[in-house]
Length: 404
Image 1 (cartoon, one colour):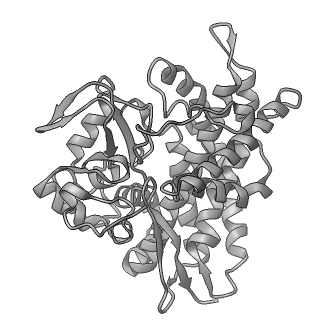
Image 2 (cartoon, rainbow, N blue to C red):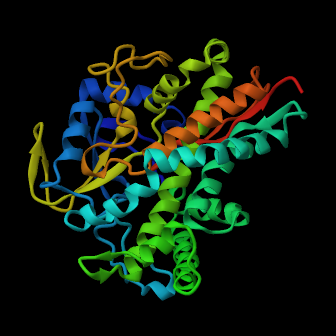
Image 3 (cartoon, rainbow, N blue to C red):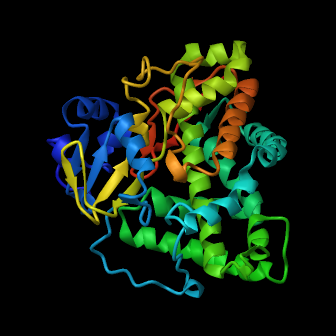
């Protein structure tokens, strides 16, 4: 658990420190100047690069940096008993937690489900969902833009992809939060992972006799080089789709809603110039990138004088990279019409997010539909905004008020 307060972020950072989660930007700015690759022994020990160049280079260097463990906690010294999948274990989460060659063919299986064409077919469904959510509170004059809105959207869209009941959304939300937001609580993390594994295992077995128009069914009826895909791989891809497709996107939507609630000039500009929404979406993703991924050093390597040894954990701090002034002009500002925006919100290299098209659409539509129905809103007086962090940073509570 979180221990003593941090006195030296270059040598003892704590990614679960509450103050850091609430406002990490000054820490990143200081580290880029004084120690661009920080080191900490907390949470099992890890390295944390903070410049765009270093994060991007490490993400592309699959020879020295493996994706065998992408979690931000270093469990290398833990002895973990692998459970059979019938007992709720999730052996791997391909393609994100495997290296080539398995990464290559498992990623290829996912891509059609998140193609531009497939995502376009889900846009109207997403709009209808956003409108129905807004209708629940639009007359009240207040809402929680995170809990009542942002957190309700991705989980329901991912349910459609997986072919699972929408009424499981609250349960899925709780399990995903246990795995990601409360990853430093071993009991809670393992319980969440086991619940996801057990539920999806049952779904995999059911699809064998009751196939539908969903990702799980398609995977079960796909062959690779004449061989059926194993249940473990189907389960892993389904679990990844749920875990990676829910918290990451709702955090991005929630951060965007928080920004618009606290920056009336930007909110009013988007209302007046809705054609800016695609560009603004990219900028909000850059400025409030939610995800930090990890790599494991596969072979001893030195990066800018830092000797990284086999087994070391390296945190790919994509949010910090996206605030690097060496790459982005006015890096700490949100520039709604920023034209050159090669951000790393969706990662880089072979593991760049396969669901980026879907996430972009959900963020853009969520903002557009909210502003259409509620063009004027702000944080409620005395509102407490709660942020979660670690693997995925985003607001969990954003109380807002508006004309009812």
